Figure 1 (cartoon, helix red, strand yellow):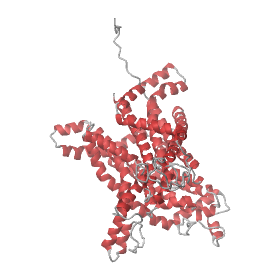
Figure 2 (cartoon, rainbow over the protein chains, first blue to last red):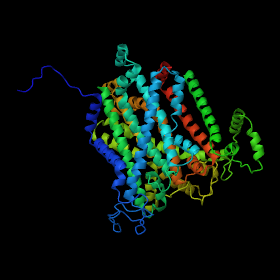
Figure 3 (spheres, one colour):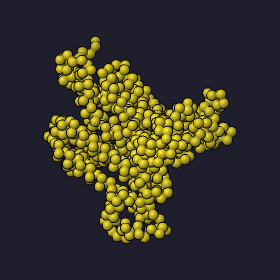
Figure 4 (tube, rainbow over the protein chains, first blue to last red):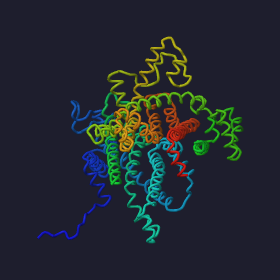
Length: 297
Length: 342
């Protein structure tokens, strides 16, 4: 006998689950997610997969085209660069610098920004709208320019570039968190919890936070896309990662001298960067649309 | 409105003042001597003693700052540590060059961007909409420095259609006056003006097209989203019910209202455009502010860094505030919101 449904009960999925269901119905977004997973795996276990070292040179194979062209060699699937280094190896190692490090930087910046933003929203701070307007205007200065200022003070280098990007991203997270919490605080359920007499910390961590996490995730993808692009741009301008580092941006910068003779050296790092950015943006955009659609209901 | 205007202008003044503080602070934070960092005169130079006195070298920070400000307003921004060129004159020259490509790229982005966004909104969730959206998302993700290199490789080198870098063929002796090459040609009135203009145009077309891509993609998305909001409103339905043609509804009722939301985001878009301009200038050796600033950072040319950062940031702030004011002037309902918030 099948179990009779005694009560009319409609199981409605949790908010995050609903976003996930919406997300899964988009094939393109799922492809982007798998791409990101793939890059993440490469970032974590990359060096175990590569046959050579990132800066290992092969004197007998300089500027070799990819394996499928006539003069290619199957030992070097995507060819070698002008110093005889394997492109596949360098690209995989580059994922650490161009994807792994930005993720770490954004994570750190997000943690600091969210904590500060929550603190700013929960305490009755300066409510002056002048200060808010001032911050709005100052935040209109683009992140790359701010990073340039910081790099100008600290000097070029990968560490300084990372530090600069992290520093630039913190205010954005702070701003988003603070605004999100402010918006939620006007909702009825927050008032209800307050009337229940919960502590401030409980209110923040168990009542408000689950409801703003979606906004923070979207902001995370935005920040990640900015960080990846800016770190690569700094590397390209030779202000970030320096010469032998297999960072995609600086690989692009080094390839300029040989771009005409061996275009694959230039095309490949850019392609990797492009695929990473498209995936991050696609995932972020789909999440944003899914969340918006959920809000409309 | 006057209240809002006053508020925005005071905001501008405060932010600009903060900028001068930052630029002044940079002089101290850079390694090396403060006077050399801000004036570009080395201690071995004969003029050093005079400059040090004028910039209040031994005095406290406040008198140093006031001396810095007075130099700033006089247009005495020091000289470059590398080539001894006065920074202010150089900035005035390069500013025009930067503004020229940025402005043209912006216009180029606006022309197809707005109609494409409208089309995507009209065919909401149809194939056309999806195609435009996917294209705009991938176009937005292309790293501009990589795309520029590919374009140079294919269009300029492989096909040989346009020159690789620079503003104009050096055969035409155009003395830079305003920095903007087209204006300069008109000011100079050279013998073969048509040919000179043609050369300038050929040099310009590639950087501008590449620069226009990112803002165009953003405009498409912004336009589509705000158009969707507007098209769902009652007054659009009533417009159709009155029997207006689709073109009339779109042109007279939907577009002006949709532009309001786009206008709000325009500041972000322009600041992105300016960052990209800096990168593009480096790639195409365009003699603008951006390439000069980037070079000065790795050459550690401190007076140039100070001046360049000040000008670019001030430009972005000015544009943001100007857009805010224009937005509030053109759309009074926004003003009402702002008053309610304050």
